[in-house]
Image 1 (cartoon, helix red, strand yellow):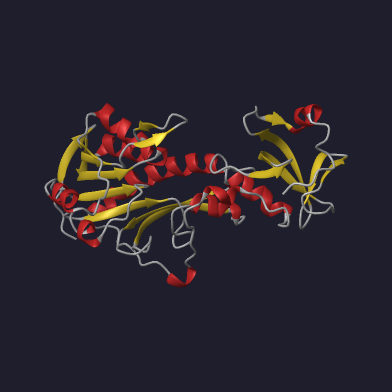
Image 2: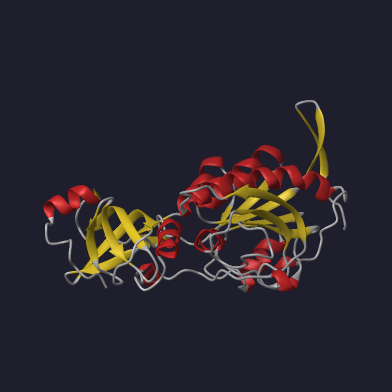
Amino acid sequence: MTKRYYHSQMQGTSQLMARIVFMGTPEFALPSLAALLDSHAVVAVVTQPDRPSGRRRRLRPSPVKRAALTAGIPLLQPERIRSDESISALQGMRADLFVVVAFGQILPQVLLDVPRIASINVHASLLPRWRGAAPIQAAIRAGDQETGVTLMMMDAGLDTGPVIAQRLAPIATGETGQSLHDKLARLGAELLVQALPDFLDGTVSPAPQEEDRATYAPAIKKEEGRLDWTGAAAELERTIRAFTPWPGSFTTWNGAPLKIHAGYAGAGLASPGLVLEHEKGIAIGTGAGLFFPTEVQLAGKKRLSIADFVNGHGDFPGAILA
């Protein structure tokens, strides 16, 4: 490893600092960017172009763009990171490291080779488990008891590079996609700044991943939020938690979508999709066990507790959800 960084006195302690180009887009990347701004020289930020958002489809900057503008950091927003123009711009930045955190575009090998030291990535799982775009949701849906974050060197594969360091995180009872996202975003930032000094001075040697243990978590499509009541209640409960807040989980009642925001699995037997009254409240039959919704929402209406919803919709018990 060629070392071309410099020493800086920070609070009386000599610390290795690197010239870093940071690549990231969503909220998940913000803690890592903030941590690097406190400890290294972030010479540029690369993020996705502004995208239409909301009912009026107005262009909206990414969270990372807003943070970069606030910090006064030079900003690139390439439509295609692999374009000749983007590659030329990044080659001119004399970066020691590219640090990539949920950027949203795949870097070709020609770009991975641009930094003097390496291109590294913070990934929200314990690689090689849950390679891919949706590791947080995959871990919850699978019923994993723990997950974590991985700092790795990037290569041309899909999250296949050598591992620099990892940190474990338990998956709590009732954990949602949002709560685990927030937990891992903070943990990833901590791991990044803690592991970088040893990586830069050569104390840590990245270790190859064990290919025979690899699992994959592809990007989630909105339609995957439709609940299949022939599945087991426990699996449905995990899916609802994993898909909070996006893409959300829904079913169909009276020809209209009904969002299921929260609930829990329990024992019992009923036809899949059948809504029934139960001593514990409202239950829905599944392929194995009963699912007890606690918060629901009709399209265009307010989110309600199941008790309030049934008070206003007395025909809900006895319905068949699809």
